[in-house]
Length: 153
Image (tube, rainbow, N blue to C red):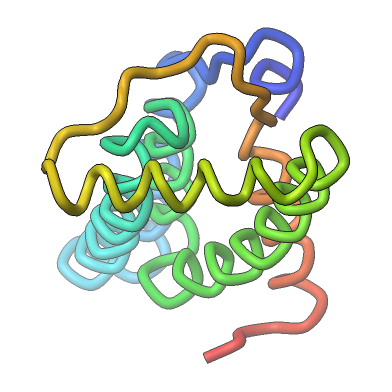
């Protein structure tokens, strides 16, 4: 969380060992076939959930890799629930920031970006002047909520 908040970057030297550690932990805990597939499903669901927002330019690749690495530890069900909590927290943060900085017109541009992608099938050019926030913060909040309240689904 520190590197993303401070440098807007989540290095591979953090996500790769985290993913490998999750796989090895579950293999040790549950055996090769059960542990590997538990982590494998979590990895690919974590990567898949954030792939479309990444393609749309809504987040960086580090966030995608991080959720995949966390999926290695939590499995498919855990990473999906973490994502749901994180999406709720991130949505509140994003809407609040959009309204605070530019009123409701910012929300209009957000929906225009999505519509553009659905119609043209190409993401809009990234605007370097757009404000963003490190998505790892809502994901960390989602992880805390998952630990406290358990699965949503």
